[in-house]
View 1 (cartoon, helix red, strand yellow):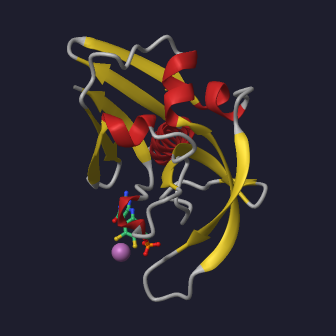
View 2: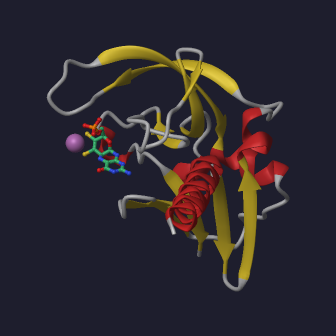
Length: 160
Ligand SMILES: Nc1nc2c(c(=O)[nH]1)N[C@H]1C(S)=C(S)[C@@H](COP(=O)(O)O)O[C@H]1N2
Ligand SMILES: [Mo]
């Protein structure tokens, strides 16, 4: 009887660990346009040849603004590299894993060197919400001083 309980306990622990490992690994962004869905994996983003590093001032509630170097891909470049055509798009909605959401007009997205999907800060990959970070992916709007639009933990982008 004791043996059965032990095996049962081990099985439960293994199942839960596998589940936790899987959910931790799931750094990806889903792009939706009508009925079309495209999943972009973290490897694609982390190794993107057009990613750049730029300085920015980070504002976090209750803290002094600090300067940091972000690494990311300009959003229009990102869509371009994925063969996503923005010509008939008017607005883009960004959804985060915590339910936070922001919407950008296409003019702002096409405004050069402004909107970036970022994945590194000061040389380290952005940590997930679970690990206490702003990532794994965060939108940075360089010319927007109001960081409430710098959406953290982006996991879905909807094109309309
Ligand atoms: N996913 C997500 N992104 C978000 C928020 C949030 O609650 N969830 N808060 C916004 C606000 S109001 C600010 S000021 C910045 C910085 O948030 P922090 O104060 O939690 O660092 O992130 C912005 N992006
Ligand atoms: Mo904020």
